[in-house]
Amino acid sequence: MAVSGALPVVDLAPFLTGGDDGGIASVTEAVREACRTHGFFRAVNHGRPSQPAGYGRQPAHSADKNEYPAEPAGLRETVEECHGKLTELGLLIQGILNECMGLPPGSLSDYNNDRSFDHMTAKRYFPATAEDENIGFSEHEDGNCVTFIFQDSVGGLEVLRDGHWVPAEPVDGTRQHHRQHRRCHAVLSNSKLKSATHRVVRKPAHRHSFAFFFNLHCDKWVEPLPEFTPKIGEAPRYRRFLYREYQQLRVRNKTHPPERPEDVIRITHYAI
Image (cartoon, rainbow, N blue to C red):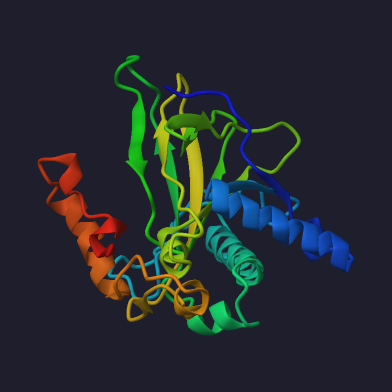
């Protein structure tokens, strides 16, 4: 059952308007707290389109090529522009996270400097048919670095918080962008930062949403950073793993679903 409860809201305007150091520090602290407590926040005044083109774009290496229909005119240009703007937003958030994590300047950008695995998807959810058959997307945690979610006025996105589902419903007067902290940063921070468990509940009306996945290159190794382990006297909570291997296991979850939910491969597969 979903319960009411406020989800963090972060105003990114100081980063885009050349705000003073105090304003930027305040936003950075808000992001840090949201990542520690929720792994999720609403971002407002982020300077990116609030209603991106409802069309996906695959990574450059994908076997599924980016093919665009002739109509409507300008679709390809719109999708490419949207992808570029969201890439810029991802780089901004990555820079803020670098500060939140107390890392040397440029650490995350040096580590995650290949954008060829980023991609975006558009989804349409049909209306709920019965009260007990209303799950549009079951609970899960994404495996990438950062995800941006845009949803229409129908809503339906929910975030798990302290054992309860909290609706991330559209808010009047704000651009509907949600940022979710992902498993990669949870591992890098040795679980100091959270990853948001979320789901989509179908409503009486059709729901449209759009997601952008700011990703890692598949050949990157992922492990707790020294700043969160020996430098503070703590043991690593995860063993080192290749990101490609983790994604392959996630795909197998879908192609060969385990009979028992507890057998689904999650990031805890690498827990020590």
